[in-house]
Amino acid sequence: MDLKKISTLHLPVDLAYLPAAQAFINELARLAKFSQKDITFFNIAVEEAVTNVIKHAFLPDEDATFDVICELTPVEFKVIIKDKGLPFDPNQVKNFSAEKSLEGDEQVGLGFRLMKGSVDQLSFHNMGYGGKEVHLVKFVDQKHVEKYFHTSEMQAFEQPTFVSKKERVAIPFHVELLQKKQAIEISQCAYRTYGYTYIMENIYYPERLIEMSKSGELISAVAVCDDTGEAMGHCALERFGRKWDVPELGMAFTKPKFRGQGCMTSLNEFLELEAKDKRIKGLYAKGVTTHPYSQKALLRGGFKDSAILIGLSPPKIFEGMKDQGAQRETLILSYKKLFDQEIEVFVPNHHKKMIEKIYENVEIDAKLNKPDRSKKLDKDMVQSDVEVEVKDTLNFANIYVNDCGENLKLEIRQRLRELCQKKIETIDLYLDMCDENSVNYIDDIESLGFFFAGVFPDDTKQYLVLQYLNNVPIDYSKIVMVSDFAQELGKYVKKCDPNQN
View 1 (cartoon, rainbow, N blue to C red):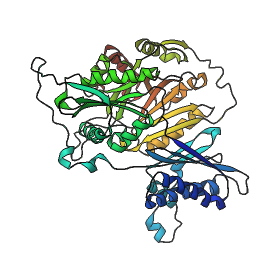
View 2 (cartoon, rainbow, N blue to C red):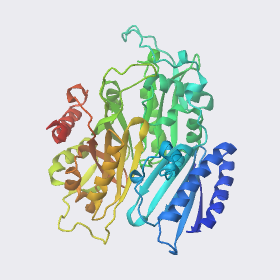
View 3 (tube, one colour):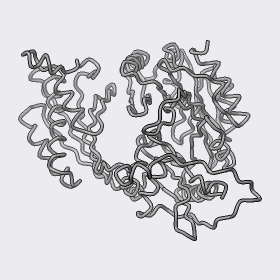
View 4 (cartoon, rainbow, N blue to C red):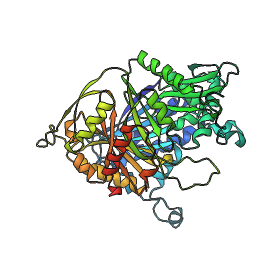
């Protein structure tokens, strides 16, 4: 069930229409039940974004228009300011200085700071001939799980004393879809398991879990103790953020005292049936490499390794816990085929053998073609459509090449420079191998320091994943890889990593 409501306002490039845009957003924000204070702050950000478009995106007296697109869901209110004017680089905006402002200097950068301080998320998207967009996001509910519990109830789980299989007492349980009354307990368990480091931060907000379950963005399952009704473990199919055709099997944890009861196996089987009912062709999951347990669980569940994502997330950190110097967490991306797939992709010759092995490992019938380098583009396109997704709290970013033009290398270099200046530590780049034009630019992208990670098998697209480390030291000997294929792929990734040579 899709609960997203989308409205669009098409306006002339004229400041006289700013009040109309703000009134439009005011009414939609009231539907989301925002407080007047939140609405006021949100409109400050909208005013700055719209004013920037009107004053700076077009030539004086140019007859042009722009769009104000509003997306309202039970979880968030997003406003997109879209235009086809001059490109905008947020990194060229100078930082606002209160001291210089008091001294009478021009208030350079003040509007940009107001925008960032007035919303929960702010992002800029340059999309080639598609124009550019400013995304302003305000979450409907910001009550973090920490607000529900005392500090003592949020400490990391203590690991139980090891009990052999013979000594273990079976605990009867059943699996069901997430109920509203369980959401707070699930968020608490996630925090006590992952600290602040789980990539999908919505797990920490109980109300969001419920609303996302209603909308279909999340299929959340809970293993429940028959005797006490306590939640023993949790797992979900996630479609947070970017909408892949295949969902991620994640948010997986079992309370330490219930480990060894088969909770995760039952949860995975339950969710797999849910996915098959919806005719989803496959699932993907990520296993951590600081220990073997999550990888072993995925292998038992029929998942096959397809990529090694080096240093994707920070070391696990709980509030009050000193950093012990652990390196960033490397994750193994695994895929499980639910229905037969026959695909045709274009692959670079120097990675062809490994890509062929990956598709054989995940049991996808893939025809691998060599791209024709004599035709860089089959269409008259100079600018590229490159989308950047930044996870500031986790210090990593994803770059998606949605469409490529002749300037793709320059575009990637610019985005890379911006991310490095922001001190983003890990950057993953997704390139669709179904697009022959894009694949022809792999050499150019790797010349910037990106290196092979593996393959992300989606449905309508098949992604080659490249990765970049921004001064992140990685000791490959500390990365635990369980399957024989993961070990082979890990050696190949290390060989490709320019930081290791």
